[in-house]
Image 1 (cartoon, one colour):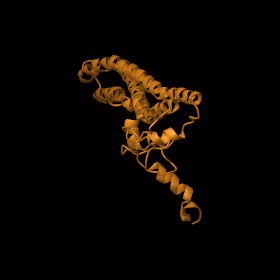
Image 2 (tube, rainbow, N blue to C red; image 1 turned 180 degrees about the vertical axis):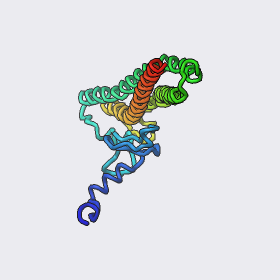
Image 3 (cartoon, helix red, strand yellow; image 1 turned 30 degrees about the vertical axis):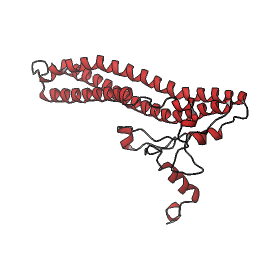
Image 4 (spheres, helix red, strand yellow; image 1 turned 120 degrees about the vertical axis):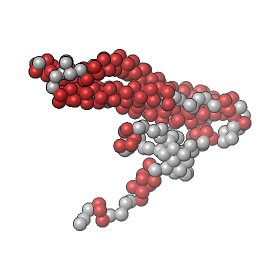
Length: 249
């Protein structure tokens, strides 16, 4: 046989594979943007390691420290430092806004589930009432559809609550940015532009964590929406079974 099966991976392919399998400073596995999710990730999304401050040049198994981020920022003078900080603040805010948008979607889905689930449970009496559903097979089909629909509603609510409760932003502006000399890896600034740059570096470090949290929120919300759509399809099926029972009566 010829082709890729007989070829060894190139250096670039080995590097890409190594990068995608490394962990961040918190021990969480990094997942490159656009990497296909596994079935386990689709069923139960997990928090990935920081990707945006990944150190791809010095050490492929670490994230950049605030000191490293600081020295990469354009800070030639105070004016440029202020412009850099304003840009970083806008970047950091995107992760927070993305997480807030996911929270709003999750709250809407949770409220919809609570309303729709009440209608589903009220139909449970029909599955055990032989006077209303005479055909034994029809009652079994109705009960199975009711169970599947209820399970999907529960799963949708669980995903929505997981997005709201289990995944909240935990990276904020580090108080060390007020006194950078006291930080573990922070540079010791003596000028205003350095102090501004230090704050920008801390914001970038927090953004990397908050972006992954917002990504996890959105993946949970997507799962909640899929379950909700499946449950609504189940309600449609239940309605169809009721129509079939009425026609056959």
